[in-house]
Image (cartoon, rainbow, N blue to C red; front, top):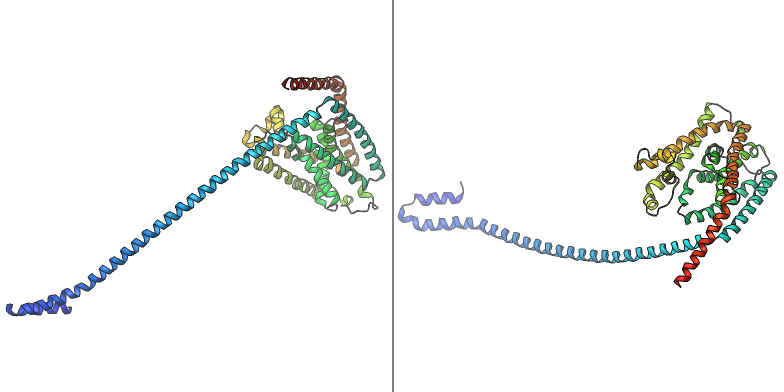
Length: 410
């Protein structure tokens, strides 16, 4: 029992006359004891109110800061929007200028007089280069022939890149045959002792790259740089790899190290290494091609109307194009790369026989090149002799009409 309770009981026991003074004292003590927690409660409440007011003031400061930051962000965004608009307009202006220059350049190239002179020069240089390459192949088959062909390849690819960009076809240069050429010269000049690259280069160059002369329909048209470049890209790697395999590797005085294919023997172990090497290097191209053409650069190709080999077949509605689109546009890339892989695998298998038999290698090269020569003969006899001058006259008439329209405007 507390002391206050005891005092209260004591007061109640007093007679009524004696209660008054004691009662007052007890009440004072009792209410005095109750006043202490009330004071504490009051002070706590005041502290809470002060803290709440501080919190409210902090919230107001935070809101003001947030509003300020939002205003600053909006101002920055507005500035960037203005800069983006300026940048996009500047880009558009550059593109328009480029298109105009491209059109002017195309007009100059397609000028009848220029075209005729250019075709003459191309014809002359092509025959001179065929003679010179044959001479170098016989005189210096171990070194000079590879250096000469590398120089020619670089020059032809530079020219092709320029001309293909004029008609939005430069993405053709991401196809497998270009990759195979890069791998071949990388092997010859940087990793000539690498067995994986040696086997892959033989499978590529004496296989699908060389076979493309017949399968793609290349034509040996001597006056046309575009046709000559295609012949060079497909036929030269086959010649170089054949020379490397059957001639260069047997010459101990060549002056540079080279993987020795003489120690290879036909068997399951070699077959496994052959396919492993060819497929591994091939997949480097296949993965890169798919990612670039169908993922990373897909929108760029579509927006700018660039042409790829797959799109060419699709627009032409060829059997290849129909097969590529069999599962719809979403699977176009997988169908193209997958069908390409299956076709080269078949050719890799046939090419395997060329590795151990020189005459099989020669016959395949002869057949592939014969088809391209026949295509060229067909072009000259059935098309060129009839339509070359007609096309040039059309160009001249177009030039005259253009000049007349310009003079009328002036």
